[in-house]
Image (cartoon, rainbow, N blue to C red):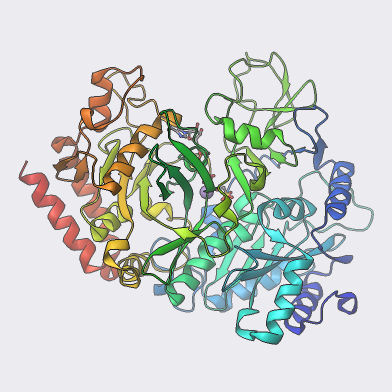
Length: 608
Ligand code: GTP
Ligand code: SPV
Ligand code: MN
């Protein structure tokens, strides 16, 4: 079958033959990435019942998919970093000895694609014309994955040609990450397929040294679209450590002030904590402009002039649907309204569209929920799954910054770390310096969400919002953050801030209005970059006073603002032992500078 390969690149031909021999598919299809191919695949998926074509004119050329109810989010408990030494996976990852894992994978992948077509997707994360393009080839037996990958990454023939060209001119740059995916549901002759094939048994496996990805049993999001979390974060974080850069779970936002000065800001928030919303913000303050470059993943590389440069390696959004609405995120809604989207686990409306909680202010009187049941506003379960997602091309965004297309990115001015905390963490604080900022990131905490399986709402530490995505030892990762700063000139290092949109007031409601009103926090951050914003020094960094925040036209009480911005020493007294316990879990690999930051925090809080 490999004779039909539309390439002469031997490593790729060998990879495809090896996987075909192992998984024994009925056919091999080399994905060219064309529109005609997309149409054919989505037609087939409609035929198979995996996709429902939306007939509402509000969702042109778009489809709904409904997953198996047991396959709705990333499965962190089945995600593995199989480094040669257990120590190199670190305490935040599941580790299995690579030889043993390879044996297991050989077993589960053996014949796994029987009765199905094997698709070969050449892809590049980042720009094809980047100085050092990062290639991958995903082999999958899911046409849904192919269609979604076409939205999320640059795929197909152009990528293949570039790999071949580099193989001739600069062979070290032609490397591609081999990424194998199977839903783990082989079909016997004559066996009827199900709309969403998957397997109870799941493996999301990374071999960091050989830069390989093997994913089995799930068809959902970050488990299956292997360019996203598996490559652009877990494997890329290892590449980044080895090559002197950073692969991060961050959005990229361009902000332009009324004085027409532009700044680029990246923000790391854990899954389902507001990246897509902030990336697509509509400023509420006169004269301020926001444009987006990305909503989930940022690669940060040292530039030629002592600056850090950022790019978004992705080409689409895989955004949380619930809570995305015309009144909270109109920019996302406008991008979605242009069509060409795949919605997973949203509800179907009677006029052939999709709906989810928070999309419109008015709730439709009848829906088909994500599990195929009739639904009315009286129903007890949500119509859309809390981790329902829209998958939409990023170039449909009206407010897309033209710099999104710059192969080597833009200069980074500020980094925000944020989480979902009901107490303790103030609306915004500025770090005293780079290492203090790393301490913010290292101790970042958030209440868990529906983006991963498991309980929702318990506080967990999530370093740099990367807990499920660091492809190596977490202490080494923090050390890399400390060391990478030497690649930048001191005056060009981004300033680092801590934010929390989710703090509660005395009545238990959100103290801060959030969403578009976060503009006011961004304005203060820009003023700090410009050296004009007023701040007070607190034990945890510089914070704005009420007067320093532009609250003009905002309908909030002084009490609520006070509740959101305060640094309460009593709350921090309670927080310190939790931080201490967290940092102890790093053991020997905790960088000394982080331990020093903890001591400083302790003495500053004690002195208040
Ligand atoms: P992933 O795609 O999983 O990485 O998530 P994300 O970080 O992009 O999260 P997203 O922007 O999709 O937001 C997730 C949830 O947070 C949605 O339900 C939003 O309604 C809610 N949210 C976002 N911003 C704010 C805010 O400023 N305040 C409040 N209260 N909620 C917010
Ligand atoms: C996240 O969970 O952070 C996501 C969704 O962005 S997924 O692609 O499933 O990882
Ligand atoms: Mn994410």
